[in-house]
Length: 473
Image (cartoon, rainbow, N blue to C red; front, side, top):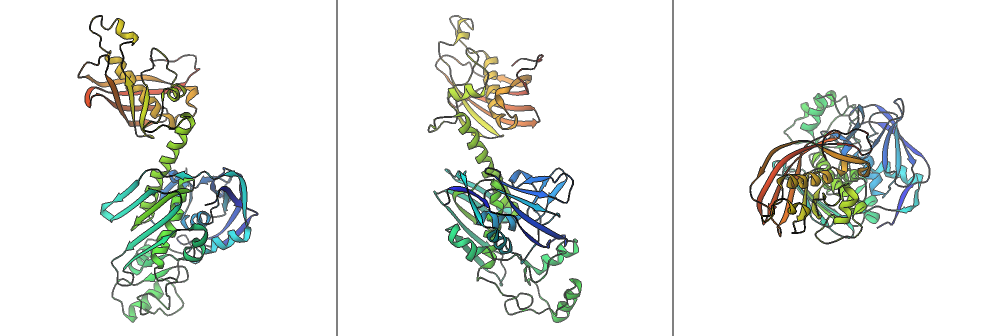
């Protein structure tokens, strides 16, 4: 696998017609600096707005992968991104003078050839690989889709498709060496579709740029010569349509025996590039499509963001630990005697956190609560829940060192059992509502797997140096 980040040596362009819009568009690939990532730039709009090629910018997956930011969109980016990822390019500015890249021949090869003509430029910075160290699984039982990422110190992909159609049957394919296999074995695999789907898309005003030169059309219903003639007129095709022995329109044959499976793998490469960094993993996918690909990419990107965040605060990696006490002090402004956490043992970014507080007889509050019968104050258990919630906000508040979270409300607080010296308090907290700088969490505190307290806490994040702050931290 490559070690250094890459861009291209010089700008290069490719022009053509968009698959769905039918509009002409010129795509220009331009070199970009280290750590820039892949960004689409709409040069036909004022201010040349940019859209990063990241999973959080996906706004539609119904007929391809569409990126968007505010009201700006770029349709059908998957083949462009597959070409970029297949050539292992990390930094690129992709300018378009329209809303949809050219469809080319329905594969990634036209973009691969253009990028090869520009030349690949090695950069000084190291590639930022995301190493998958645990199994990540996406499943959609209704559509019989399963995608799994397994730990591997390399990158491999295996894809299986089964459309229950005699022309296709069940197919599978695998990529085991991106550098050696991507261009000769996968880049030229074309889009394929069924005739009934093509008719539906046409009736919906889409595939205005589609033709028999950029897709393999598979006939999935009984059809006669008269209907073929009507279909040709409907799609404004000049040639006479024919049905070949394989069930495809006209004299079109697969470039590979399993071209549909290879094209699905190609789409998956493009969609997984939306993680934003290359992966070290084994990817296994059954019946993938853009919707499932993007959901899976979002799961992996969330893991990447979490790993990057943890690395920022946790200097020494420790088994079974996310943040130790020193990392917690880097994140939270609280100090003795009001720091109510000793460690964080689980973190699901923007979702859930589990923290631990070991309650000892040396706690300052036991001196007065209560002499001869030490009991941890319930309000401090709620504070511990809130402090866990504060760490859970890391991803959404920017520079945490310049911020402070203040209580705005406590609801549904219940205290079920006393917490005494020697207990280990386990705090399980999840976000139930978040908007801008306001967060609401629900938390439960456990001792020996029994719930001892629970509460919902709402807090607002403000600048630490604001002159007047209402509320209690």
